[in-house]
Structures are given as structure tokens and as C-alpha cells.
Image 1: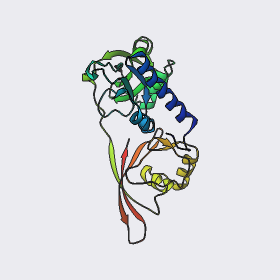
Image 2: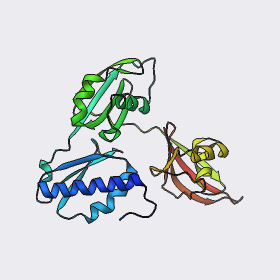
Image 3: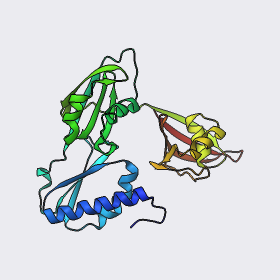
Image 4: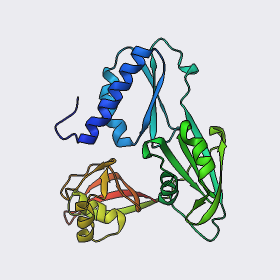
Length: 256
């Protein structure tokens, strides 16, 4: 089920999911998992394909959600009657003179003692953010989150229908690289020198398809997504082939 490269954290995620599946079968009732990032979602897919006697739904608050949770239920239950246990919260403040990022809002929520696996996507807006969380922690956040980076905020529950979907800030980058090594492609995509990018990769700050990669020579393929914490994400949209000088021509999409 897992390959030899699986980390101890990967194995814990699989074990927890298997326990949850067995609980659903034994208790004959629906259950929800923690939020998974895209790498973790891919990790558990083989487990779901082999599970018998249960059905599942992915829930993230909106169709394009990056972080999602599983809703597991016995195969005889009607999916329309299953509750995903999600709550959308609106965090608003006067951010006219203070521009904050996803990391700032996530840090404020986790600073309350909320675990990361209880928090889904965070959609940053001009007036603050909208955050999707497990309903069991929603009330606590509403009562206790009063400031983000010294800016006073008001937190309220809102419906999923009122959620303002994120606008992708995308920049298309045309680049040529000597090879499809991670350090070369990432350096071009993020506009960083290759030597500096190598240091960032070795420091385990780079993810490929949401998996940490510390090998500079890791081979990148078309469709791969490279992300650096705090710097956004680059997608290898197209590998166009070799130039006359023997370099590889790429079309990259950078998401900020």
C-alpha cells in the first residue's frame, strides 16, 4: 500500500484513516477526517480504492478547495443526508494600511492553539480573510480571535454560499533551462539564482506536488507544481522542447 519512501508521518496518516474506516463500519455512522493537503490526498487514494463497505465524499467548502477532508459513511447511507461538519468564518478588520498574507491569518488562528488539521483553505480578501474550519472549533475562534498582527478583527460565521472564491494571481513565465533539474526550473520560475535556490532546496523549504524535496537534481516533469513557503507556487505548464542552443524551453505559471 505504501512504498519504501513513505515517511513516518505518511504511515501515521494511513493508520489513522484505516482506524476511521473500521470505526465507520463498526459504529454504522458517518465520520469525518482531518483536513488533507493535496499530497496527502494522493497518498491515501489507494486506501480508499481498496476500502469495502463504505462510501466517501471530499469536502473543502468549495469545489476548487486545495485542503479537503473526507466524509466517510456506510455504503447503504444516502450521501445527501451526510453532514461534512465544515464552517466558514469571516475575519474582518481595517487592513487599509496593513497588507497581510495567508501565513499571517493562519498563524493567528494556530496561535489560539488550533491544530493545523482542523483548518482548511484560507481565502484572503481586502478586508481580512475567509477561513474554512472544522465546526467543532468554529465557536472558539469566533470568541477568541480578536487581533491579527495588532489589527483588531471581528470574526463571524457565514454560509458556504457567501464565500468569496479566491482570484488566482497568475503570471506566465517563458524560460529556458539547461535541464529539468529542480534547482534549475525553480530558479527560473521564482527569479532566484540557482545557487540560492539550491540552498533553499537543501533546507527542505521546497515542495514538489506538495511533497518536500531536498534533492536539487530531482527531475521535474510537465504538470508538476513547485512551491516555496511564503513565495507562492510555480506550475510547469508546458515543456516546449529544445532550443537551437540545446536548452529546454518552458512555459511556467507563477501563482502568488
